[in-house]
Length: 167
Image (cartoon, rainbow, N blue to C red):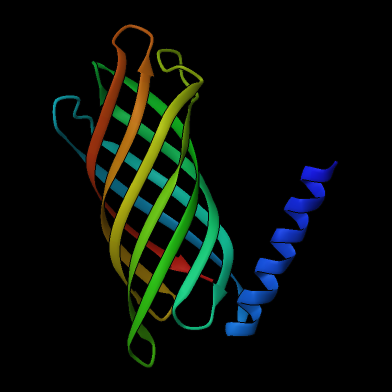
């Protein structure tokens, strides 16, 4: 009970400090992407992700993301993973409705198909991008650890391109 109380106190204090530094508002995102597999365990995949969180002023946002990654060229089969991650973004405004950003997703992937273990492994995606009004585009590197029933542990790397909307 003490740990829960301490955690809630830290969350409330963090929100209060963040609120004091700038306007805090809800921010949602929906992205559609393609990841081109690179490296020893290369596999292409299609991505559909959503992030929901807060934007603090003009320069920072954070949120919780999830989605669906469909590996369609994986060891002569198709596999799917649901990532759940924390997203952090830092923005640099360059015009009234245009900003560049640096982004990082860090979390865990969960297998939802037969040959992939349910509790998969670490996923990390650093990226750079641009926001123009409500539209966004980004390029990054996605790393997903996978536990395949037949092949064992794999580190799946890919260059990822996403387009989306922010609301």
